[in-house]
Amino acid sequence: MIVLSKEGNKLAFELAKLKNFNLYNYFFKKFPDGEVYVRFKKVLEDNEIIFVSSLFPPNDSIVELILVLNELSNKEIILVVPYLAYSRQHRKFLENECISAQALAKVIESFNVKKLITVNVHSSEVSNFYKKTEFVNIDAFEEIINHFKKKFDFVLLPDNEKDRVEVIENLSKKYNFEFSYLIKERDRYTGEIKSYLNEEIDLKNKKVLIIDDMISTGSTIINSLKILSKMKVKSAYVSCVHGLFLNNCDKKIKKFKFVKEIVCTNSIENKFSKISLARVISNFL
Image (cartoon, rainbow, N blue to C red; front, side, top):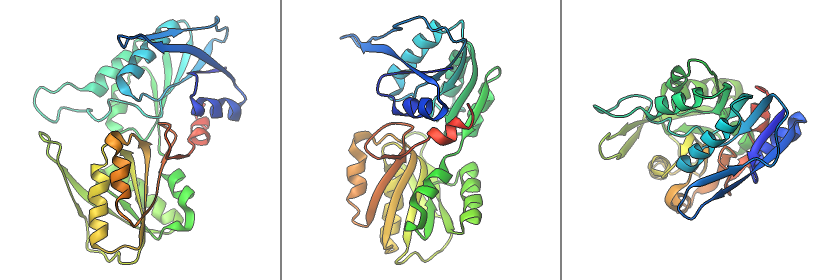
């Protein structure tokens, strides 16, 4: 069994070490015009290959994925993509929209991928597009809860998506903490988000852990922090599974003086990646 990745993939290294698998790095570069180039340094003898690739930034990473899967078309592949790009468009929200999650699934299933392992996919509906490939969606919220341990006394989920609310509710019973969530309304044309609490609660002087599946532009988190600011919380810890942090949104988050820490997993490697997904992913290999 070989774990395959381009150089610098820390998660792949951790998985190989944890499972005592060989690690193989292929050569990767980009041409001046932006095209992607991949070269294997030797012939891989193993019949079963684990390919680890977080699909961020999405477009280049997907082309790289296609090139690698094409080269390994005679192997059985377990594809580990902790951040599965193009999952937000899992249905037609507006008339005549393209369903990108379905399109990507068709591309992946055109190759010999027997299992796809991802983490906190944006919507559980994405799994319905995979007809031949075993689709494993791991939830990492418990990893985040364990990371912060006794630092918080209240959890805020800045979203009312049913699956995520159920996960937090179950974790609240297991770890004995209070939680609430925001009702989030998004304008499908402008992308503008409006948020408000699902219930009346008193969070004055509370230490609040905000936990979300993704921080992209940071607008959802910033809306949450504005609400917490008005409620005069003592402190806030901002966390997510997938940290994209586009347009330096982390700086906007840090402008709220009561924010003590920003933490995410290593699904996308960045300076806030303090929680490793290697252990939870290894359970499915």
